[in-house]
Length: 294
Image (cartoon, rainbow, N blue to C red; front, side, top):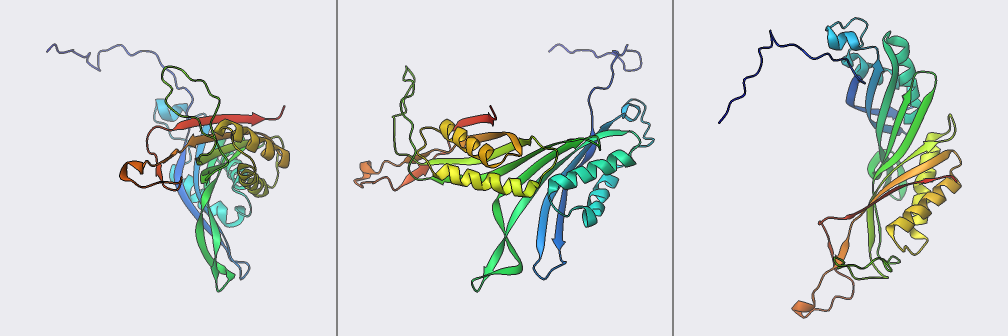
């Protein structure tokens, strides 16, 4: 085996470099807030990440940490500002955080605050909603806020929403060629795990209300039509969301097609009247796209 001799670090001629885009901050800050001002409590369960950008060349090049906020300080700030600053949506709290970091950090020019908010519904006890007991719900409310402390760009989203319908969906009329093996069908299970995000055409709004309208529109639209394809359903849902949510400029969906294949029990002498399926773990279709205002 031939060995490569590396140059001595003390004698080698270093290539000329410079710092490119960079940021630093704190990730996976798990923030839980209880609103106790009324007997009927409310809660916020949020994972937060803050990334700051600015003139950090000296820290990278010469190890000079002058005027840099410690990431430990970033964590403490998130919790501290949440006491009085987290009063409504995570999007508004993100703006509050960014304003603070830009004001406090002499070298900070802008920042990004990212959120994953876990949804909780009220438990029912003796047929009524309980005032202070909750059960976690399926979809997550995501948000990314970017800004320089004066102007902001906000993107909100939905993650981990498992939905399916057991009929009223098909896949027909597609191209047949050498490697086509899938038979056409006008009656199949349509299942997916929704990832969605949207951008706003307004500077500010009731972000929690918009999120709820997007969620409701998605539920309504997924159920109200025969789906010729996952693509057609993506378009129809986007159209419904943009109709009901004038605050939104465009919306993105990612729809993995989680196949449910009717299991062949005939070989065992058992008729399967489209009631037993194999939830397929093999490669799945992936449908993605933006729906935008024309």
